[in-house]
Length: 287
Picture (tube, rainbow, N blue to C red):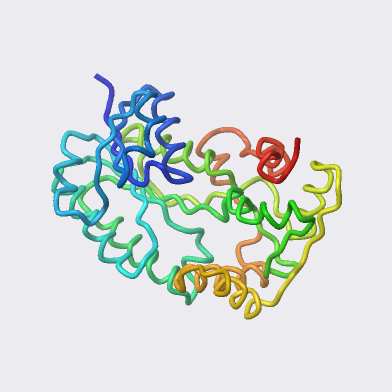
């Protein structure tokens, strides 16, 4: 019988791709989700869906029988506590190997709450009894979908000035997760992941203009103004602080150069931003 992979955050941007890649790899998949109704496509594809959330007292019971686990701890006031409890549950369930989703090294090393939390959880995870690997992706290409509404109005708005970002597709991150989780021998190390090239806001606006056949202009706002704009939109304070912190770091080209982590793991180049935008052109108002 093939190995069983326990997937957290199964309906999220990375988790759903982890499920798909694992099934393609021939693994069995058990997915944890708060709302099983949102996991209908996963269930139809053959994923065993269980209801629950990280931090629940019975998570270890729901993990029982799994050979490997993918861990994505949601960002919130209790992130560190939930993360440690999840690591406890993996050990209690007797899972032999696990892969954790973190953030790319320069952000993990920064003096931001996101960096501090991930650094603490990375160290705790690596010190556990199970075999472990950590993936540290740069900004997701999917983050650009948050600007889809403004792009439809001809503007790409951000706060990272001319800072560059080597965006990576969530599907490529998931492919690395499954590659590491697939066997005891492959599950090791810390892997910084990025796309094949680095882009600033003007680059991305130009790509969108070419794709959509109409002008999309890059509109840069200062981080403080961006923070006020997000608060005015009613977004949660923690999310606003996170986005503003990342924008300030990006303005300084922190971690701007592409890494070879994906290439080393997968033996091929990661998807480029032009290809990803083409696949998602409808979200930005393309025909």
